[in-house]
Image (cartoon, rainbow, N blue to C red; front, side):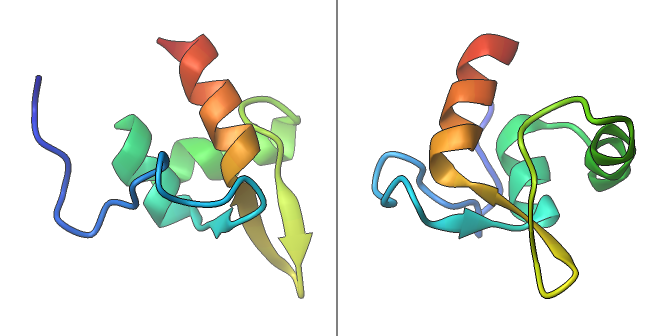
Length: 70
């Protein structure tokens, strides 16, 4: 199994309501930030929460989506 980049968050250690950026989701999943941007526009991929105009992904949603995407 390939190792994750050094700044990749540990989903198991984070609370379910913590928020992740597109960059963090990209590091966790291996998909590009552009893919997450496109999916949000098309209402596909993981659920997106917009806070002050910035897209964020709840850890609970990331866990569910990553679990179903593999």
